[in-house]
Image 1: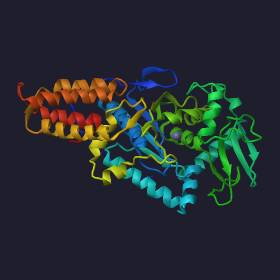
Image 2 (image 1 turned 45 degrees about the horizontal axis):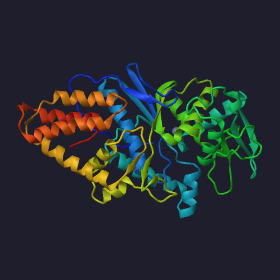
Image 3 (image 1 turned 30 degrees about the vertical axis):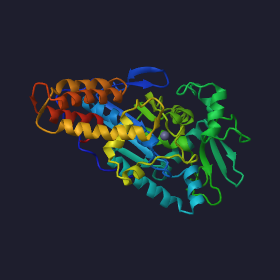
Image 4 (image 1 turned 60 degrees about the vertical axis):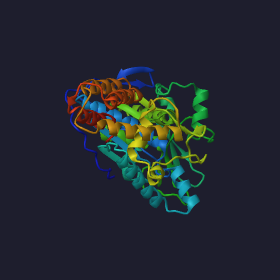
Length: 414
Ligand code: ZN
């Protein structure tokens, strides 16, 4: 798939600190990419409700991680996917009378334009499921061949294929949930624990045999059908990054079952552990509930931009919250972000101002400390307040360095 244009990242003097992030699976804050190269996989969108603030919050958070790694002198390889065929997309297409391919293409394009506006660095490896079907088929066939998957007749003919979790003793290590909790979340998040005939209720679907009215691809060894959800990310991450990679990222609602199952598939494929760390972003609420299309409380980036909100205000409204915490999108938060844009611009006007070196160091320290962007914003706020008070020693070029630091590390272009 084609990505969107990469933003120019200004060069900064010196080097950033090693970046620490919270690993969900251990609960520890760790240096997830200790080597010269950092490899990141972030689960992409299912293109039918792009791009709401929950999406934006996730991709901006991992964008800050990419920028911090680069600033620390690491070579970054970032991979992501687009789930351009899956149940919710097909259901939406049927409900609205739009061809599923058109829906997916339109929403993927909207996502790309939103990411461009928000200044998000595009992935280096960016693949859709549709273009990855041959690799998924090969992986499902390999799992069947090694006895880690089984066939279950579909009511409409052909066989569905499920992973056999009993073959993976490490299943459960990502999210650390007990079986009762896993069963509840499986039912809520796309699984089918009640389907008769499965060896275990949690066994995830790998291949769905063709159903009437649904898209399907030829796969001689499996029968016509389409990929399950988790195996697509296993395959795209493995092929795009190699395993183990450093960070598997996504919203916290992906920890189980999606990341749990993707990691399990890779173990069963003998690829080993998927990622050194699993990093999850909090859920973004609106009017008291998690943002979701089914609840009808989505705040879309494209709608905000169409209403005249500048993209950097949206980005600052997101960065004002710690990525790993759940938070609520509010009108007040957006007003505060717009005010911050105005204040920073005033402080950055002109050639001189308070010393910028402590600002650069402060932003670097904050983002290296598990992407503490609220603290980074506070560092810039304090500099701006001093600059606007106008009673400090004049440092020539200080506003330029602050502007470059804010741009390079936070992706906020003034
Ligand atoms: Zn994924």
